[in-house]
Image (cartoon, rainbow, N blue to C red):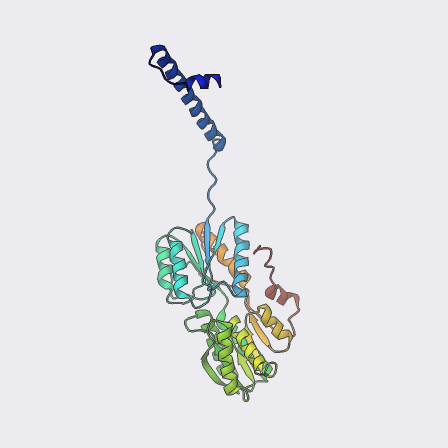
Length: 350
């Protein structure tokens, strides 16, 4: 410290003082340079920096429904196992195509190494996906198909088979005859569209004694809009129908509320799609007679695993199926069904 005080003393015009101050300045600079050098050696002991883990953007159709939270849990599990960063972001509602397109475009700007996408619209999301692939960002599609060949793979339920499975269950509980209605979900959604078409194909091919008196009404993207549409159908056909089919969680839950509000819950055979807790509760109450359950946890898990495989240069299948299960009051409490309808989420979504 004594040397530093001398070095920092005011510079005089005397020749000896000038020389002394110049030497002191060199001494200080030497100390500073040494400190900087030592700091670098402490921060970088000669080893290369650890590589940044790949970032996988997982973009659902929406973030509010329990179905998508389960997809998220599966994606997070795969990310932890593979040592990659999973970024989860999407629209709040399943009708916001503009926001979903914007999210994809944001990730194209360099924020992700790969994208896992559940497209809200099989046409509207085609251009953003093809742009991402052209920029070297591989895309894996989950849940709903896309009208493009640019994606590396498609991980999803066999939705057409799911619709056929629903038709067989509804025909069974109706005794193979009577009248029924189908409340559709929303235009432009490939997954629910395939379920609806599979249901209609199976009914027409195998159950000619069941008359479908309404198949062109849409419930929309929310439970409230589906309840309104369902109540309209029940007001018109409630006294003459023996069966109802709905192709996804929100339409099924909305129809359940409409049945309850009109006093017809449990009196009309009802088969829905997906197996959220509210729908399971409806089944336990005797108001739902069948649910076609997907495995959204498996979908998120396989989506991320497939994206990482592509980044690693591995060959992947163009289409990868996930599990499909028919849930009924009779098998509701079996181990096989409980694994699908009650996946462990808290461990992955903490």
